[in-house]
Figure 1 (cartoon, rainbow, N blue to C red):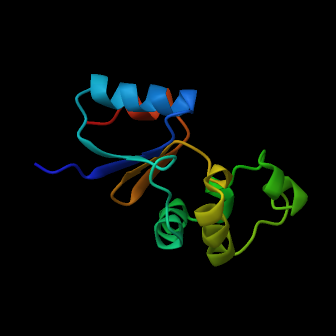
Figure 2 (cartoon, rainbow, N blue to C red):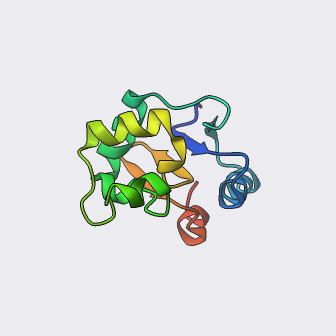
Length: 116
């Protein structure tokens, strides 16, 4: 059976490595996309935003670009955000686990423990 889950992560991120390990330890099949090595394009980011329901859900508000543009209180449109992440992937909160129409943003141990 093919993996229906996709993990977008960065190998330099501790939470991402923990999430990846949790999936492997639980025997969960997933597609592994390390976007530090293979940057995401705007179309992929837009799809992540669509499943998440908003830019706010996936925006890394601690990033300098987000701070300087005031995105914490006034997030950009999805297309603008997607283009920005394609150039600066650290604007995306991580890890991001897509499971069909469900999304888990950040490493939520309880949510990961419930995955099969």
